[in-house]
Amino acid sequence: MITPKFEVTQDESFVFVVIHIFHFRANNVELDVNGNEFRFFASPYYLRLRFPGEVVEDTESKSELDISAGKIYIKLSKAVKGEHFPDIDLPSVLLASKINNKGNGKNKPLIEEIETETNNPDKDVEEEDLDWEITQTIEQDPILSVKYGFNNQYNGWFVHVNQTPNEVNDIAEPETTNNRARCEAQYSMETESFNEDYYMSNYIDDDEILLLLEYEPWFQKLSKTKKNDLLQGSVKSIDSEPVTKDPADTLTSQPEDAFFTQEEKLLMMNLKKKTCESNVESAWMIGKLSSSCSCLRELDSLKDTLVSSIRRSLVYPLFRNWDLAMKIKKDVELLFSLGKRYLLKALLEIKQIFDHHDIYYVYSKILLDDYCVWIQTSAKDSVLKSLSSKIKSLNIIKYDVDEDLIESNISRLNLEDHSASRNSSLNEDAHQNKENPLPNLFPSTKGKKPLIEVIEEKDFLE
Image (tube, rainbow, N blue to C red; front, side, top):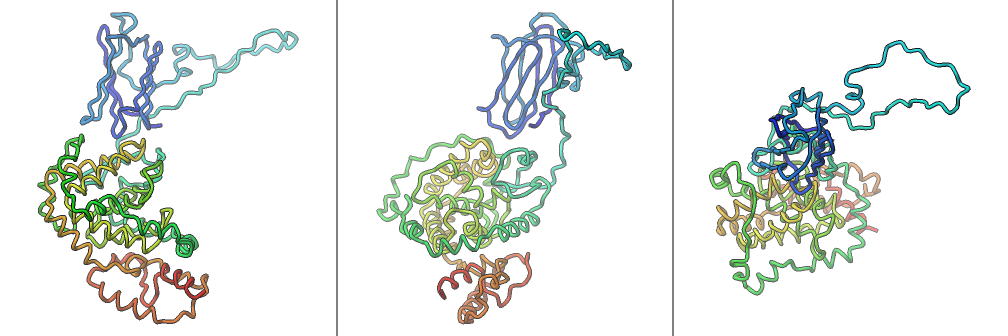
């Protein structure tokens, strides 16, 4: 648990507590008053204060939340009006446990005579008091040197990420790790997590994957009937916090490739649900497959976005298949070509999934809230259609996605004698994509086939 910073003041009738907390869900706040004890809980924060006198929770007591300031204002009534609470401005006194406060400072003598009589079994023996209460320590503010999220403008949301069960996050110290280091950590973890046997199993037993390839998402059905007017006026208003910077002012001057790198990836991952409804794993799945969520990546180009998405789709989800990834890429092309109303509807579906999760709601705050506002206020259908054309024109091959999952593991697969016919084709494709290479984060892999292609060829040879 995290002990938040707080301030306590008083007047003749009331005690005022101001608690400084950020990044929590208001509907999970619990307050408890019992005698001279006050307890506050809002995961992952916990605060226990022990006042010199008793307080009560009555009709005059109240609490207010200021989201923008990150403060909760609490007003508690004194049990005895006019009573003065001494040392109420000393945090260490208020945070002290019951054992530390017991005796009002009267300590036992250093030398004490112990009775040696043992023939009186009925004599009460005073047991030593044990302190079972949580130790509370207020942490110092960390030095935040990096930013992330929408338009690279957020920080402080993951200061205590290691104290929460956030299974989406892949970065050990996200508040102090720059984008370059995040990128290296992402590729290294993906390489370690790639399971050749699992990929091969999906490649051989592909009955369920074939069903997914035939599935048509909701926007594809609407596009076929050309009923674009079905969504006119059906988009609900978004109740979100104000954007700290105007997205229209900060993004309209950037290249089109940078406009939707993160939205495109999130949409692409959301479509992985395909034939099933949202479930308890949906938030984890979308967040884990999005490098903007799991690694807080700032993606530089459209190709980097597609490559990052496809790589993770071959490592983490239930179904890991290259053809399925390419099918979803085509779905994304279609979704962007339909315009901002369709795109907004898809983003709102993802936002709803994150908003209802106790841990992963933070990704709505740093990404989706601002994106939904920006799409409504500044996005243009013509720009989205142009982006759709660029997605379609990008030819992503297995060498792009699998640069570091190289043929170093081929000895384990017993494929050293495989013919070089596929190698020549691979080299030609790599030459065509030489204009947009991946960052040179790994050793050279010239002349070696991607491991995912080697795995597929192993099944073909058998």
